[in-house]
Length: 112
Image (cartoon, rainbow, N blue to C red):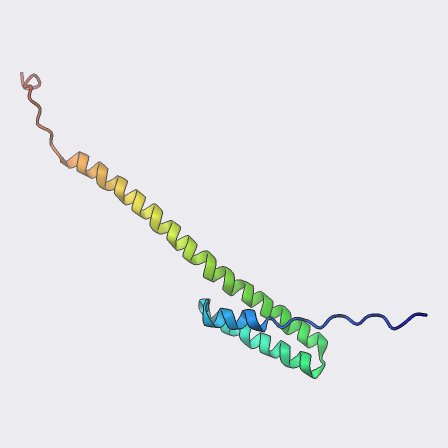
């Protein structure tokens, strides 16, 4: 006995991830865009339009990934730039202190 083929699973709407990105990590409003597509995906899934739900779900996942990556990578990059800038400025300050200080020596051999 053969039954009907199993139906494809309903697409995920990524709504929780979109809400999290909208509230906590809204980099360039990408979290809000992801939320809009997640709500559209959920509406289409409820109405039974699986293909449209899959399309909007894919867009929501993409914008969620971009928002998360932008909100995680950019602060790390900014922190790395600040650390390297502080290191560079401290070395520059040490070199300039050595350049602008005049050391008096006890011997006058150089004057003769």
